[in-house]
Image (cartoon, rainbow, N blue to C red; front, side, top):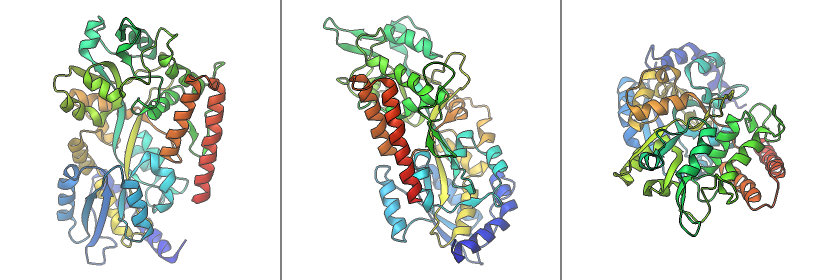
Length: 435
C-alpha cells in the first residue's frame, strides 16, 4: 500500500461514526478532509442525468464548502471501455457507478472502504441482501443505489383468450399454462408463443434467466468467498440443481415436448411481447415504461417471477448498481463523503422515484407502496439475488454454448454443466491473477 493510500485509510478510519450517521440520514455531510476548499468530484454513470440532477444540486448547495459534484452520463454500450481507458490514463472520475456484473473485473480500480470505517454489520442492516456482493474480505467495494429486478410481464388479452385468469405463481403452473397459451398454424409453426424459454440468441436476458433458475434451485453458481464455480455441486435429489435448471429451461424449445413454445426462427422475445405474439416475457423492471410506450394498446401487466413449489429459496435475478470511489482519485476522502451522501435515505429515495426503480436500502423497501407496478418491483427487489461474474460477455458466451450444446444434442446436460463449470473456473482464475 502506498503512502498516499495509508494516509487516506487513516482518514477513513476517523470517519467511521460520520459515515454511519450520514448514510442513516441523521446528519448531512460534514467538512472533514476538505481543507477549507470544496473539492471537485466527478461522477460517471449510466443513470440518466435527469434522474440525479436534483439530488446533485441539493447536495452541492448543502455541502458547498466540502465538495462540488459533477455527474457525467455515459452510454451503457461504451461505458466500461471509456471508464477503463480514462482510469488508466489518469483522467478518470473520482466516483463511478459499478454494476454487480463488473465487481470482480474492476475491483482492483476501487478504493476499498475498510470495515473499521464502515462496519459490515451496518452495511448489512442498511442495504439489501444482494448488496453484500459489494463486500470484500477487508471492506466495502461500493454502496448500493438502486436495484433492477427481473419480473414477469404477461399479456392479459392472451391469457383471457386461453381462459387463464392470472399469471403463474409457481413453475408447475408455468408448465401448465404455456401449452395453453401457445398457438400453432396448420403447418405446426408457432404463431403465438406461451413463453420464450429454451434458446439463447433470440431470448433477451437469457443468461440472467438461467441464473435465476439456478439461484432458485439453491445453486449460487459461484462461491463468493472461494471464487470457485459451484455448478457441479450436488443437491438433495439425484439430479443437481444446475442440471435441473438447465433441463427445465431447454425443454420449451424441444418440439417433442408438450411444453414446446419457442424456437430460433422467432423474433426476439421482447419485440414479440411488444407485438402481442408472446404471452409471457421475463424482463427487467426498467423496461416497464418503454414497453408501454412502444405499444400503447398492449394490454399487459406484471407480477413476481414464478417460484419453485415448496422451494426453500424465494428469489429473482436483479441488476444492482452501486457507487464506488476510484483508487486513483486525488480527492478520495471528499469523494467518499459524497458517496455517503448520495446513498443516504433521502438521496436514494429521490433517485429511486425518478428512475422508477426499487432502492438499494432496506428502510426504503419496507415502506408501503401504492403504485401497482412499483409494488411488484419492491417485492422482487427484496428477493433479488445475483452472483460474481468474472466477465459478463465471456460468461454470456459460456452460457450460450452450454444451452446450444444441449438443444442440438452435442452434449448431455450433465456434461454441458461440467464443461461450463470448468471454463468458469478458468475465467475466475484469470481474474484472480489480474487483481
